[in-house]
Image (cartoon, rainbow, N blue to C red; front, side):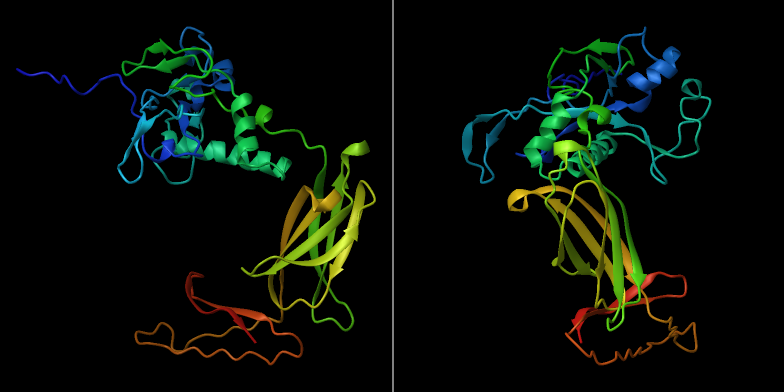
Length: 345
């Protein structure tokens, strides 16, 4: 060949677009088999025993300045310090990409599941850890969740080059790995209190349409259980949550409450432990389905080639109006239509 490519690999930053949006968290990627746990189990896979994790060769370098606003007007240069953190890719899934053969990397991945590589695979791992943080501390805002992810991250000091050699990167926060590799066990704060063993069971109550008995346990110790009462909210199918009951809390232990006058259908309950001025301290959710006697309605003949009219007749309610949802499924159980969504009778 008489030509060479001179404008391809500039070595400059390439992270741009929505990961640079204000308030977004941009995630770099490191293969799972080049992390501390796997390098300890398979040391022969890692590079000269240099401390992992190692950044993927395709993980983008941050540092592109923002020079224009959304209208194209020139603004003072803004550098948003991306990426924010690093997480593992090459994770198992059920359908996407292909499996790492069991004879590769000394059998580091013996299962048959496909492995998903890329920053698109790493980002959901961080989202899952963020959800655990939010569950442990329901009162946290986005900034507090981000802070837990960033301040507990492990420093990343090596990245894999295109020739599969290691290249050192700066210690501390850097434009390759951000604050470092997110560690779930450090990022998720310990539970000082929790609502556990949550159950919802249909029960018969005289004079009530249908009823569900909720049971739960508040765990914790000492002053950490500053829950003054439980607020139970309820929603029917996809409706809004509405408050149904308040129960005084008396420290750690078992609690129960029966919610009456529930129509047939799917119900979700949120049990919130609150302190002074209804400050949310802890919560849990439980879902149950109240069923009537089963009725099968089919179109005949089936299968059919032309249009079919299905008629659904609902009984008149003897109390407050109720929301009704009617869904139609084919013989394979696939949802094909919702002729009535959140209607009322």
